Image (cartoon, rainbow, N blue to C red; front, side, top):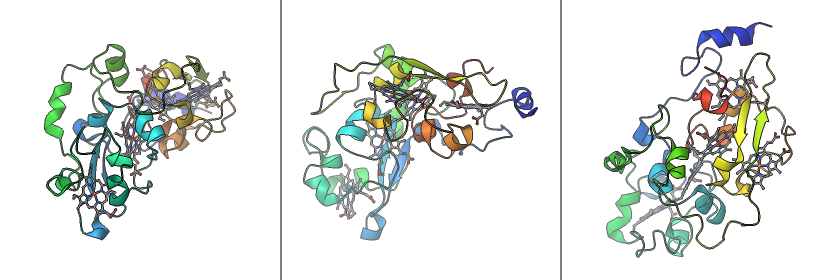
Length: 245
Ligand code: HEC
Ligand code: HEC
Ligand code: HEC
Ligand code: HEC
Ligand code: HEC
């Protein structure tokens, strides 16, 4: 079968002939969401949320493990009542009116403005961060390692310090001639909880998660849960398959 060989010579990236990648937003909007499960239905504009603004201060695990936001837009049952009662955005230490703006009248539009690019004037604060071409245009792994940012790792529930797991796993592709993908636990557990991936996205035993194929990744499964919308995108081939040129 000569498809993989063709692939190796055909070039990769957004114009890759085999897969369709989602349209890339401008770097300052990558990872930005408009949350609109209930907003417009209830007479306010969609709530804007920027991952790059928040990830500078909080690790993924704070929101996606402790605060129980799902990793799929518009699936968490966030309501204004819960926000005011100190859950979700309104958690103590967050948008509680003390640590950061709260849920009183003058501040509604800071969230309910329907503007996906809200806050982009602050993007230039990242100009000293290590660069990468795709996604936010930032190498977040390097920025963290170099101490250019130090996001809070927990609000109440500490990461379990007796579990540290550094294993880099080699994931052989099922096509011939394709350099394997590598999964580094270290870069992930620096910002995520084991529970963010195990057991829902990946089995905890190497090579037992079935059919990790690029097609499924690009449908938002497996690596594609994060690497399409928030972490660096799937067309940055080399970062996962270092052998691909
Ligand atoms: C820190 C961000 C934030 C602020 C400030 C905020 N909201 Fe919200 N609000 C949200 C989010 C997120 C949702 C869930 C949106 C969705 O799923 O459509 C929401 C939901 C709502 C909804 C949808 C129905 C419901 O009750 O859940 C209404 C109405 C609403 N907010 C009104 C307001 C008003 C009025 C203010 C100011 C007094 C306000 N919000 C301030 C983030 C915020
Ligand atoms: C300050 C809180 C916060 C932080 C920090 C945070 N997220 Fe999120 N994330 C959210 C919210 C809120 C949503 C939307 C949930 C909803 O609408 O149901 C979301 C949604 C997502 C989605 C779904 C996006 C989509 O388009 O459907 C992914 C993937 C995701 N987050 C990954 C991450 C990763 C990876 C990190 C760390 C680099 C991270 N998040 C850090 C709050 C956060
Ligand atoms: C971002 C997702 C992610 C996070 C977070 C994560 N893992 Fe994994 N883990 C994986 C993947 C992917 C595999 C490989 C699965 C496969 O090949 O089927 C794996 C495999 C494993 C394995 C099996 C290794 C082997 O050689 O068989 C163990 C044990 C494991 N993880 C433990 C942990 C622990 C402990 C944590 C938290 C400290 C953690 N993982 C956090 C994605 C993750
Ligand atoms: C739950 C979210 C999530 C999942 C699932 C996930 N990642 Fe990541 N990954 C991240 C985040 C966040 C980073 C930090 C870099 C960034 O945000 O761009 C990262 C970083 C990496 C890096 C580090 C790159 C470097 O420069 O050192 C590699 C490689 C990587 N991921 C590969 C994978 C592979 C392969 C899979 C699937 C087997 C996977 N990831 C699944 C969230 C995730
Ligand atoms: C976020 C990590 C990640 C990125 C980025 C990535 N891949 Fe993959 N790729 C994987 C994983 C994981 C597998 C499956 C390995 C396995 O079967 O265990 C895979 C499998 C493959 C396969 C084998 C066929 C299949 O669908 O399983 C090919 C070909 C491939 N990748 C090419 C590419 C190309 C070309 C790019 C850039 C356009 C790319 N990959 C970007 C993680 C990634």
